[in-house]
Picture 1 (cartoon, rainbow, N blue to C red):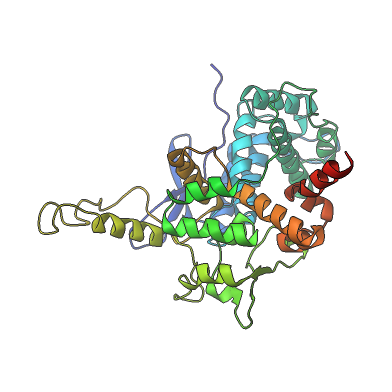
Picture 2 (cartoon, one colour):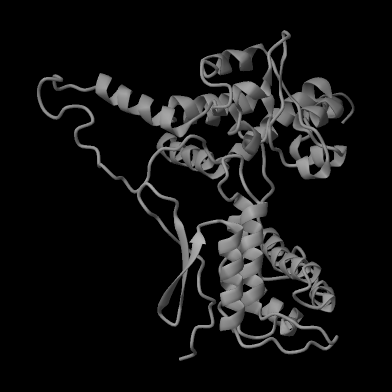
Length: 394
């Protein structure tokens, strides 16, 4: 059985009332690195990692090259810092990178990173196909692996030719591979939305209503704060602190009309920098509702809250993530016995209605797209006009 070539982990040791410490284990020995997350502790970790690995050999271009394990560890550290959510936790992109690197780790990671070529990448892609993932998602995951080598080349960990060679592997084409194909996303019907709303907590239900009215992205929805809203006019304007195209130097403004304002009003009586939609608020309302629906008298049976765990493994946080928002909707869909739909399809529904009423340009502005052809993916063409033409001349 082959010996595991995984690099030692950068771990966290929590200490009550004190700053958490970082540590790693090499050959069974626990080595403390300093304060967890600090640049000094990460630098010490890299030094130990480099010392633990065999000395890198010379590459074909005459420069030193890192092992595949070293590149993966360094890139994960970079991704954890780079892809962060507003609350400071790692974002979805970081999770996707970790997920695909598990497939890379199935092979030998002690080899020089310069030896990783298109053939090895193709083998990993085949593993993704056999795992039942969709063709589009597989292409994106393979792209994340290639992007890791691009970053490593820019950081002078490997020769630039490694990234160039990996780019020669073309993406999977529709109908020309064994990868699973997906159907295009379609708008969700308002009937399915209404049926689902009955099984959602009040906070999540209001989030769904707001997204349906405004067409904003899920990532923009979950981070709304009172300080991000300009309420000086009849139409409010919401400027997210972080948004999808921020790194491209673009601004994002969401117009909030009267109906959306009614939804938001009950969430604005809080600190200006506090998130409007919070899981902890939703959990508090859920418990209050259960207490109100209680059949047994309060002076009998258990006192409300007496059966809670002192240290639960999971607690409701201060902000929803896009994934937790989606999961709440998915659970409600099952209870409502409707076809599962995602928040992304709400955006399609909003875009289609706006395009029908106000045209493609209006839909483009509301959705925050820089190009109209992107908007067309979201805004399904309304066939009402085509039907009228067919009835008259067809």
